[in-house]
Structure formats: C-alpha cells, structure tokens
Image (cartoon, rainbow, N blue to C red; front, side, top):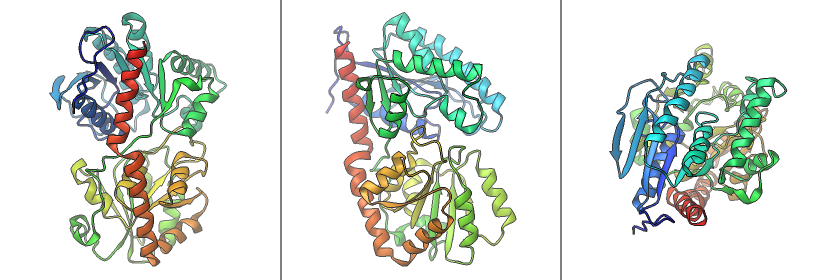
Length: 417
C-alpha cells in the first residue's frame, strides 16, 4: 500500500535526502542499511535521493555518478579514494566528500528532510548548512558517537585544542538537528550526557532483513558443503573486523580450543583487524580456522545459517558509542549469539533480555571457551536460544519494523514543521 504523504506546503510527495558516504552497491553496514531504508521509503511514495561518494568502502571501484534503483535516485560525487589502512588518505576522502556533497546538495531540488549519518564524522555540518540556507529539516542518525570514539582509540586527546574543538562542533550539530536518532538506550544515555534534550532523541535500532536472512537447516546448507564443513561445529564471525572490535579473547580462545578438531572458527569479511587474525593464524598453524572474504548479500542467509554459534565483539569503553548491527543478522539466522564485550552495552542487554545467547567479558577466555563447548555439548539448548532470538527479531529488529518507524517519524517531523 502506497501512502505518498504530502508535504506541508502541498507540493507533492515527501522528499527525503539520505546523506552518507556509502550507499548501494557498497558492502559496508551503513550502505546496506540505508539502501534498505531508501527502498522501503520509496515504496511508500516518498521521493528519496541518496547522496554518497563514487568510490566504495572496500576497494576503489568507481561507480556511476547518477542512477535510479528501485525508485531511489542515487547521486554520487567524486572523492579521493577511500582507504581503511591509510589514515591520511581516509581524511582526504572525508574532506573531499564534505566539499563535494555540499555543492551537490545545493544543486538538488529542495528536500523536506535531510537524514544525515556519521560517515564521515561531522558530515552533519553539510546538512546543517543546507538547513540554514534552504530550510530543510535535519534528522541526525547517529551510527557512531564522535569524537568520543576517536578519544577511546587514542587518536585524539580529549583535553587537546583539536579534541575540544571537534567535541564542541559535534555537540553543536546534535543540538541544532530537528531530531536525533539513537540506535539504543545506551547510546541515548551517551547523547544525554552531551546535553541533548531527551525529547529530541528517538531510539530506533538497526535491523536485518528477515526475508533475506532466515533459519536454514544445517543439513540443507550448501555453504557447509562448499567449504568442507559438513561435520564441523562452526563458530562464525561475519562482518567488519574493525577497531571497535576486540579480538584478543577470541584469538586466545581459538588457541585453547585447537585440540577440539571439530570446532572450526570461520571469519567472513574484512577490516583493519583482519591482518591481526591472519598473523595469529600464521603463527599458530594448529588452530582450526577459515578466513573468507565478504559474501554477496543474497548469500548471507547461507553463511550466517551455517553457524552453530555466531560471535560479535565490542571493545571496552565503546559501549553506547557503537552498536554492532551484526547481532540482528545473528538473531535473524536463528543461531545463538556469543557476545564478547562490556556487559553494559546494547548488544549485551538485548541478548540477556531475550535469552538468545551468551555474554562474556573481554578478559574471560575460560568463559568464551566454555560457552562454545556447552553449545556443542547441548545442541537443544543452543537451538532454543536461536529460536528465541528469531522470535525477538521478528518483533523488534526486522527490516520492515524499523523502516516503518523511520517513515512515521520523518512524516511527523515534516507535518510538525
């Protein structure tokens, strides 16, 4: 059913611009999430434009400057090629996107709402300037809280001149947004600590597509057969291997479980920490591990469904600053989650609340190993956790649930303005 909400000025369908450096066909998490959101908004009659860069998150394959896909107009601007390893090239890519995106937005028709993310950090400055110049509403979707993440990574010092400057700009932009969208209550608490009005903050979790990722019987999964894992107990890590993820307990656990020949650790994806995993496996040839590249989105149901238990990890100090969306893919696949990270985090709270997995700290190697061995030894209990996760997913974290919340929120914002 197409709703096709009218703008307050009666000028036709609601116009929404999604501003993020990455969009379809990029494989990054925010790209896939925003591609989902754009498509679902367009299906309800919203005129959606996505403004992104013409280079991808993984590699630098150039993309078309403009195209239509599924009712969504995609506009891409030229930037310096993105690099996840070279910090100076990454900064150059960010800066070039700020400038190019600003001038491209001014050439687009006036938008009712600019939905701006945090890739790159402070790209909301472009949305704010357009808000001032053209009167568009500004909806700030906080996927990561900056510059606090940079402080935790040791890239910036909070007390430095530059650190204080960035912190001031970030808080200013959050306060100037018409609405701020947080990914969970832990992130909401972080934003409140920055002085935001709670009435401005709306909590909408990220999601997975439950039609794409769904439980698949292990015996019917060709992924296991293709990789010679039919009789293995698969411990899966799927997705970005980034700085926000602490792999120390995982690697130590791999070493401790090396004698359990049927337990195989499978890593699917890329990221800055992949080299750390590769180096570990090269120096520990006894570990049972497979390292695979990203799989196409249409095959995620197979790779996620191949797991007997799936890992997600968050480094200490990052609770509320990041919220790993891979948990929702795990829940969608009907597999139990093994979370490694701080207990006071969105992922840990979700797992405990719904009984869909196990939570261990970033120092608990014994607990990590015990969780895996218990899941292997009691498949009925592991299955029950997976079933509970899928049930909770369908209620709260499915794509259709989340994107409907966005549709309702954005239309209310325009009607109220």
